[in-house]
Length: 207
Image 1 (cartoon, one colour):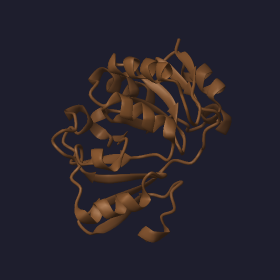
Image 2: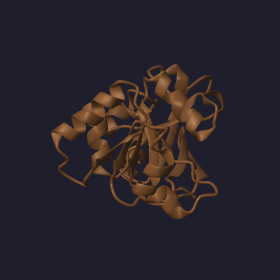
Image 3: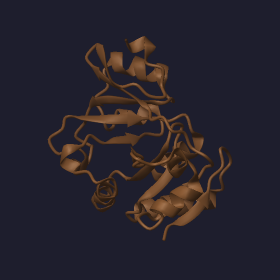
């Protein structure tokens, strides 16, 4: 059964962050709150953990586009090809409730690409997750919890999340009640946008 860890909006202890980071470095799968919904996550370099997440969601790694969280704008360039046009867009809208789809760089682990040429990048407007990623020194794979056919409380209330998925993951990070609308997904190619999904982020400027 997963360990339940309380996270606060600010000033989480170094001991708490160290515990989470050490677990991620040892192939842990975690559930954590973002600025939109609760999500599943792991170290992007852990093939074992990525495969576990795919099992939980009932998806195949080879047929899905993955997203991950970076701690800041400067680190995005390590994992995606960022044009001047793309950088100006990212700087304007991040941190925020957006996932931006960009061309993947060669540093993205193969398990996350598998023939696909793009990745989704997030910098959520939620300090606890950004602190975890910063201390980890590597992006965190992120994908929303399965929520089809569930009552809203079942994927927004951390106590109910623990009941439903605690057997399948290693840590559940309780940040209080989460949201129920996913991030907006926008693909950037050259000097154009394509709205893949309208969600919590305001997409009116991309239309």
